Image 1: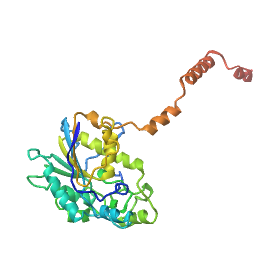
Image 2: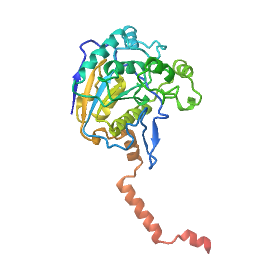
Image 3: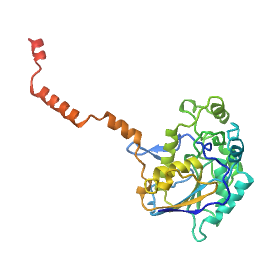
Length: 318
């Protein structure tokens, strides 16, 4: 079951269609013994396997406050193409401070997860200020970055982020932690990634984005913490809710969170975050599989070949 416990009264400047982004998956996964990929904890051992993950879990989703990109897009309806790693507006910062009151006073958040993009990280430290009122632990993970389709979704280096947010640990991040096409990753610089976006029109493929969304679900499911707050973005949460919760609650099929909305989700068991089936893969497998009648005919033909000698071969030997 789930319930939105805080929805801000102010109008959102974002028109949803343009706020997107994403980091590359390199460094976000490791192979398990069977060769399958699993989410690799970032900046801490949330899923180290030494402590059983508690169930049920409470997961708070918090979309960032109003950003400079949200405001620009609301006014001009286009991407300025150079508003990299957009910051919160003054209103966005106030929204984040007010959001702090949405967490129950008697509830301690065990783990705060945040996207490395400035608008999410700033919302995190304002809504859950590190200290006695904040979370017990903080983790920055590029899995939660926005679908990279706008300039605001290109981030900053860990060194720059560490100066802006000394409360958070960015040391595990590479200099370019957001999405970059695989053929350009070797030796890529922040400036080079910006040129790929602005000059070459490179964007994050939907398949790569969804893989990150699913990896986030795995990270939450495997975390040793029971109460988790996640600070991220409109498209990211839209896809997460659609993939994992719409089947049981249709309102999440097209659910777009407002700036600084806080949504509380109760996760009863690991099955709540089981990776959803891939419709395209299932369709391909079904298309490749022979029809029952065809398969039966092929099996009968094979049996007949085994039962009778190859007359052609016998003739050639003779």
